[in-house]
Amino acid sequence: MAQYKRKPVVIDAIQWTGDNYEEMSVFAYTPGETGMGGWQMKEDVKYLRLHTTSGLVLCAPTDWVIKNPSGQFYPCKNGPFEKTYEAVD
Image (cartoon, rainbow, N blue to C red; front, side, top):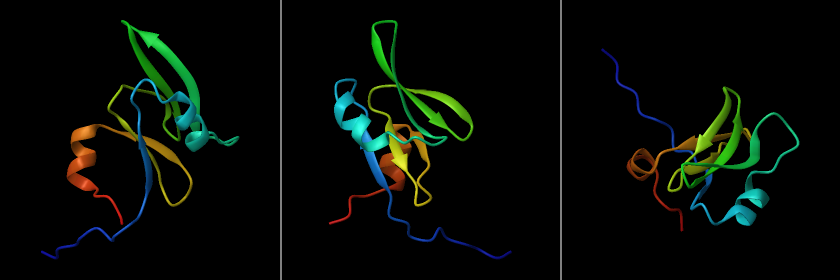
């Protein structure tokens, strides 16, 4: 059996806090298919609406919004994000 490892890829990402709407709108606004689509309240929590290639996704506070090298956005929960990515100096 052959083994493979993931190529190193540098991504842009911002963690949604529920209060950083302006920062997120600058980062994730695109006139294309993917990107931020506002926010909505659900059970007293402010969720970010994120349009992805798979459809609309709600991002909870502490979720990360990742912009991949192709310019598409997708969400990632905090635990998997911390296991997969580290800050670049």
